[in-house]
Image 1 (cartoon, helix red, strand yellow):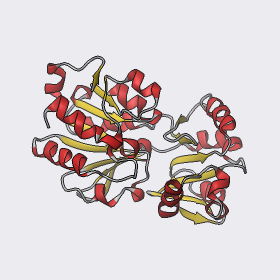
Image 2 (cartoon, helix red, strand yellow; image 1 turned 120 degrees about the vertical axis):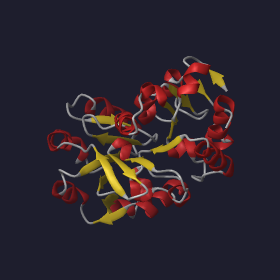
Image 3 (cartoon, helix red, strand yellow; image 1 turned 30 degrees about the vertical axis):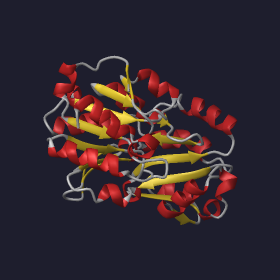
Amino acid sequence: MIIKNGITKEALSRIKILAFDMDGTLLDEKGLLSPANEQALMRAMDRGYHIVIATGRVYSSFPESVLNMEGIRYRISSNGAHIIDQTTGETIYSNLLKKEGVIKALPWISDRELMKEVYFHHQVYIDQHCMDDLPKYGVVTEKSQDYVRRTRRPVEDVMVLLHEHIDELENINLVFADQEKRLRYWSELREIDGLTVVSSLPHNLEIGGPTTSKATALKELSAMLGLGHDHIMCFGDSSNDEEMMATAQIGIAMGNAVEELKEVADGITKSNAEDGVAYALGQLLDI
């Protein structure tokens, strides 16, 4: 465990909320919740901590192992577009894309060389022709292809669907086979007012609303619980966790995290393949 800054006994004593990214963080390299991490979460809940899932995944693609864990009440989905109360199934907070921002981004989103994933109503839709040839669009590993096939709904023309639901969009995910184009689009899309643009995978860009983020959703949830940012410890591995890391009192980057996240983190734990979440909770909170 590498301790960088901000992790004092006093700060640790105030923590009431433990927020976890899923892929690359809480889940292992096979996308599974390990027994060690599951047991650590159960011990944390027994001690009164609020466990919050904060992910870029749409709610319908949460793994059963996480959905079925008793005691995890709040789930932040689609990079902060929604907060779902698991006990009631109710969406208690939403922060969606704005129509004006989407229209400005259409020249990039409409690129026929890209696979577009359109998120709304807790589901993700893609073009059937992309589903039929995933490697062509940058989805090359067997694990990634299996995940897309299990969690995406193919349609004849996803752009038609985007326009039909332009006021209900949680997120738009662009998937690239061309890394040079991805970096160029990232730079260009960041200049458009009314959007947030982050990434959780080496081949994607994730477009959200002007204030949509895991951090914003987590602050809203904290307020609902009568708590503040100084009560939050969060864990992540990708650039879409960076704002959350900066918002929390204590931010922990995984050993497998991207370098820019490690730079802003207060501490660095073991990798997700080494049960880094359980290790950090044991080291810092004696859980």
